[in-house]
Structure formats: structure tokens, C-alpha cells
Image (cartoon, rainbow, N blue to C red; front, top):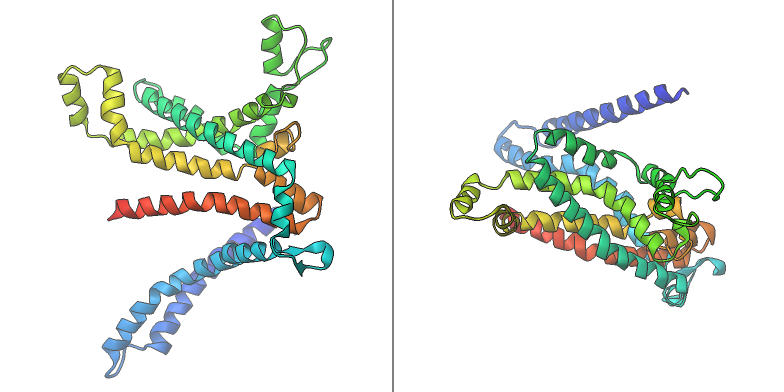
Length: 333
């Protein structure tokens, strides 16, 4: 089957299936289960209205159960078994083995380094871009350019930046921007930037900061536009300079939005995989938890330790998710 036809057929079946499900399920509910006729018509209508929301939620609940809840439970089960022993239950042995491997601690350390740097700089640059682009005439164009990396996949961004960090022999022309600048400033020989421990992790973080700055800018720009003009004008009348207006008037009013952006990027950082996989594959001390999990699951064929590392990632992400949900509900009250 031609790919274009297959895609069109998928859309037709998917959309058509959803429409058919909602139509026929409501018809069954109203005409068969609780027909609005006879002496119990009012009670039947009330019962039908109580069940109707669950008809709409059912597909989503089934999908969440199948693709989210079940994988979590199965991953937990696999993390307590050993493939080499035919899937026998081994308790916490996989977690002990994982904790004894230097690569795991390297990955955990790097993840914490990513957590310290990427959310902070992405939010800072996003806030700076949101504030400055609102003050220039061509701000909409600037925002589009800054947001554009969000439209690129992580792998695509990794390929682009790998070319920026590219290294060629000294007798060849450098196509990597980093080495071209380095040599023009008096460097003796081009450097293989991605093999320099610690600094290579920083260079990988630059890629994610470049991508996430656009996201932070869009959200924070909307928050800045929502600040009442009266408070800003009152501060200016009282003699506040632009820095005081920004840090003492605007920042406190968008603090909750800044926290949401920060925590959202934090979740992305905890799951970072594509950039590391495409640029260094975890070599030269750049390993992260998601790439460590991939190595164990698909290279070493060790589902026990791989699942254990997946559970660690989930445990690190869960408190942030719970905290975000709690704050969202608190703001809705």
C-alpha cells in the first residue's frame, strides 16, 4: 500500500471510528439502556446524563491504562526479575547491581548537572527574550526565529549542533563553527569538543537550552502581557527605573508562571535521551539515565537493570508532576 494512501486511510478510519463510537454509544444509551419514555422517563434521563461523561472519557481511560499504567506495572515487575534465569524473581538484586556500576552514577551525576543548568538558563533566556521582543517593532519576527528550534526534533537539533562542534584535521578547512572561531582566535590545533569531559556535557546542554528557550519565551511573553498596565504605570510615576519595574513589579506577578516553565523543562531534562544518543552515545563521560536505560535494555539485553533504571527515572519525575498538578488545582480554586 502506498504510504500516502495508508496515511489517508488511517485518518479516515481513526476519525470515522471516533465519530461512530460517540454516535452509536449515545444512541445505545438513550434508546436502549435508558429510554426517555414511560413513568421512569425523568430518572432514565438523569441516569443517562450521569453515564454520558464516562462514554466520552472511556477511550482516553483505556488508552492511558494500556499505554501508561500497564507499562509502569510491567516495568516494575521486570525490574524485579532476571532474564538470564528465565524471568525468575530476584527481588532488589537488579537495583543493587545498578548501584554498583560506575556508569549509573555517572549518568545520575550528569542528570543532576543538566537539572541545575538547563532549566535555569532556558527560563532566563526565555524571560529575557520575552521582555525584549515586546519592546521592539519587529518583535513578532524575532519571536518566530527564537521559537523555530521548537519545531525541530531533538535528533535534528543534535545533527545541526554536531556540525557546529565538528572537527577536521589541521590541514583541512574547518566546517565546525566552534573550531573555526577557536583557530581564528589563535588556537594551535582544532579540538574535538565532544570528547573533552565536563565541557562536552555543557555543549550538549547548549542544544537543549537552544530548543527550550523558545518554549519558555512564548509562555512567559503571554504572562508578561497579562500584567495590568496600571501597576507598571504607577511604578513609573513613582520614579521606578526599567530594572526596578521588571524585577520588583513584573517578576513577582509572573512568579507562578516562571515556576511552571521551570518545572516543565525540568521534566524534559530528566527524560533527555535523543541529544546524548545522537551526539556522543554516552561516551566520554556524557552518560545520562535515559541513555543508560537504553544501553541496558537494547544493547546488553538486560531487562532487569534496564527496567530498574527506568523506575529511577520515573521516581525522579513523579514528585515534579505531582507538584505541578497540585499547583494547577490550587490556582483553579
